[in-house]
Structures are given as structure tokens and as C-alpha cells.
Length: 318
Image 1: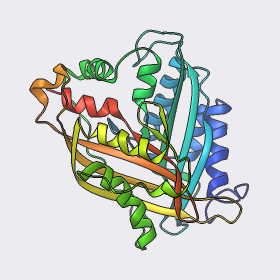
Image 2 (image 1 turned 60 degrees about the horizontal axis):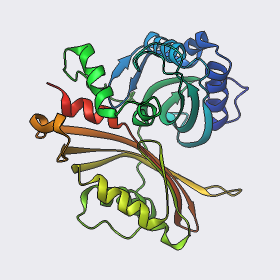
Image 3 (image 1 turned 90 degrees about the vertical axis):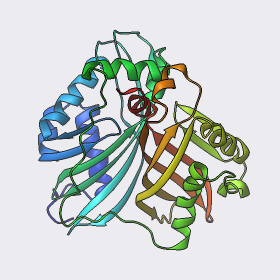
Image 4 (image 1 turned 30 degrees about the horizontal axis):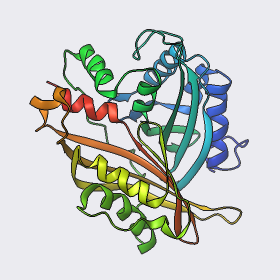
């Protein structure tokens, strides 16, 4: 990998090693070694620019959850050394809420949550990042509903949702979007669950059981149960304008193939939560990153990361 330190064998190794150093090793200042000075980080609720914001966010998180682990579940790679690589890194984090911060006063509850980070990496640094964390899983673990946490976060901005538009990815980098029919069929699987009145038959039905991780820290087993989850989800959210920004499959000889996809959709709330009664016409952006494991062309496991707290911040914003 041109421009990367010679200790790194490939992008997968680079991402795992630097994550371990920064988080597991608590070498926070090394963020300056591995993030560019003007790195853009976009989440569903906020956009930041600059390495100092990354360092501050890391310190603030560790103040609230000092024992937080970042356990790598997978890294799906694409791109090249010329325009830039992209790593889609799925992380599972156990942690204990023992410090004050954006999640309120300490509850001393054990928390489990997933994150997927898509990072453009070039010449030994992360230069652009999209990050989605299952914030509603954290909220429920500490005993607060996502809607109430959203209201607390909105109170810091006088009730207004104020996410800045993210700058475009760096020049020269092009996100991989699969054009073959197989990749499109998997992307259509999520598009169908969001947009269709009758979602298409679940792709993993040929393998029993299918396992799916969905927002709120929930795990669902079985194709019928997954379909039912999204049918129920659609009772509250009417989605449209689905757009896939990134999709790639890593073909692996020694184990299952893995798909990574990042997409956005616009939606309006149509549920019955009284807090949203006067805001139901607000259009919200759903920013999602998904992973899926494939065997013999069949989807057998999937992880769908959507920040439901960010959705509620948009709904409840003045």
C-alpha cells in the first residue's frame, strides 16, 4: 500500500491495528498520526471537520464509558492506493456508563452497542469518515427511550436540529457501487423493506436460521421474523428516495463472502407517538450502513445500522 507504514500488510490490518492502539491501548494522541488534519466525520446527527474534533469526541466518550471496548467483527475493503481505499469496519462495544456527558448522569448500567465506520484511507491516514452507531441501543441500555434522549440532545441547540452538510469526499476517491446483478439484488433487499408495500421474499430463506441485528440492539432469527420487523417498522416510518452510496462484496476463499453497503433514504413519521403529533410532516434523512454475510449467494446474517435517536432529533426539531 503506497504511502502507508511498512508494518501494515493490507487495509484490514491497518484498520485493526490503529483502532487497537487508539481505543484498546488508550493512545488517544495517536489519532493525530492516523487522521488527517482536515478529516471530515459525518454521522446521522452531526458533521465535524478536523482532527481535534475526533480527539475531543474520543475523550468525551471515554469520560462516560471509560471501559469501552472496540471489538472488531469485520472489515470490508474496497478502493485502491491511487484514489484512496475504503474500510467498512463493524465494531461491537461493551461498556459501562459511569461518567457524565451527553447520555446524562451515570447510570452504572452495562451497555452493548454496534458501530459501523466507513473510512476513506490514503497514505497512512483516514481522510473522510461516515459513522453510524446504534444510539437507541445505548439509550435503552441506560433506561431512556430514544425519543427522550433526542429531546435532551435537542435542548443543547435550543430545540433545533443543526447538522451541517458534509463536504464531498476527497478528490480522486470514488465509492465503489456494485453494478453486477448480485450486488444489486442485496441492495434491493433493503430498498424493498423500506419502500415496498409487500417486501420481497427474504433472500436468506434458503438457509435456516437467518440472523439479523437491527436498530435498538435487537437480534432477530428467521426470515419471516426479519420481514415482520420491517413491516412493523414501516408502520411508523414512510420512506422514499432510497439512494445507495456504496456497495461492495469481498470474496473470501477461507470463509463466507461479505457485503458492505451505505445508503440514505428520506422518510416521514406516521406513528402514534404524541410527542411527534405536531411534527409528523417533517421529512427526515435515514443514513444507514449495513453488512451482510453470504454463503453460496444466500444472505445468512445481516447487520443494519440506523441511528434512531438521530431520526427522532429530526422529527422533534423546531
